[in-house]
Amino acid sequence: MKKLILTAAAGFVCLLSFAQNIDKIINAAEVERIEKILSADDMQGRKTFTPGIDKAADFIAGEFTKSKLQFFGDSKSYFQEFIMTKAKPVEIKGMLDNDSLTMNNIAANTTSAEININSLKDYEVVVVKKDDDFSKVVFPIFDMEKNVLVLVDTAHTRRFKGMQRFAGNAKFQSGVSQVFVLTANLNPATISLHIKNQLTEQHLKNVVGVLPGKSKKDEYVVFAGHYDHLGIGKPDKNQDSIFNGANDDAAGTTAVMMLAKYFSAQKEKNERTIIFVAFTAEEIGGFGSRYFSKQLNADKVMAMFNIEMIGTDSKWGNNSAYITGYEKSDMGKILQANLTGSKFHFEPDPYPKQNLFYRSDNATLAALGVPAHTISTSKMEEAPNDEPNYHKQSDEIGTLDMNNMAEIIKAIAISSKTIVSGKDTPSRVEKQ
Image (cartoon, rainbow, N blue to C red; front, side, top):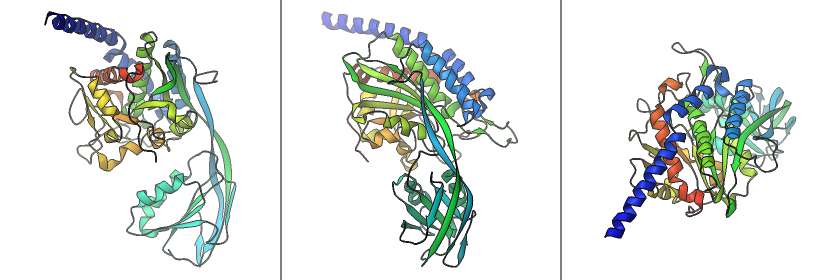
């Protein structure tokens, strides 16, 4: 009994020392310092392909320098740069039976300078009927590695117009095209279509820093969040025109920087290599995480913590967060076990209908079998119980709870310790 009491006392002293150590690094004041910079008006909403996002990238790289992180792979800086191609249609002409094809009823997901379709046999044909779920049918087509001709019923005109803008975004160079036609004729006999595009190369960059491991240096643990947002829009009647994105996702990016500082201060206690990454282009298709995932052997990634919108309290209140895809691996159980005795608790994703597991930057690695999960507190229900500032100009620093954010970041640091040390390895996610 005496030995048990002494052991418990020693553990308590160790835990108290650990808590004091982490509080010096991860605290509300430091959260606020970083948040103020990332969500400031001079970042211009951190939209991709703007000076604002470049300014944000420089700031993140500066923080990685302070944390003494190494560069990723053969890179000479913290920037993981890549090129995307934007195809702007300058000429569209053709016929679908007797109906004219024009800029108004055609959308193309492509990086080709020209598209010519002279027969319905040239492309695989997909039909989106009036009663079909537009999103479930259409958006998976964007990831197909083949030519597809999609006939969309005019009942979906509003969604089609939004999809036109999405299809026009810059994308990775590819030799395949998906062409979408808005039409009442879903069973045509003939087609002739010519599309001429103006191609523009656009440059993007993730910000990546590395803390090398020791005995398991070829096994990786990834902490990530996206640093891009929506930029500048029309002025709201109660707000200015800047989408500051304090919660989405300056909050997650803040967590990544603070975790980098914390683990760096632990003086090589990580047996596995830790990769800290701020992704670009999440808001326009997750291109930053998709590119990053191609630079790694997924079999060597033991876990990924994607941190998304942790600036407000969860549906359970403070000191709590949820994990998307909780049931797809045992990573959540490992994290919660490491928090035994604390006031913080992780919960399974309470919004399964929103399909959040495949809607953030964890999705690409998860599809490759990695236990890659998003940690969030964002309320993704229908109004009035949802996040009132989500994708609005009102997503500003004044709406966030700095103390709660600090507690969430500390919980991530503490709960991940056995994965970082190599003691625990989460089970794999089923590959897609």
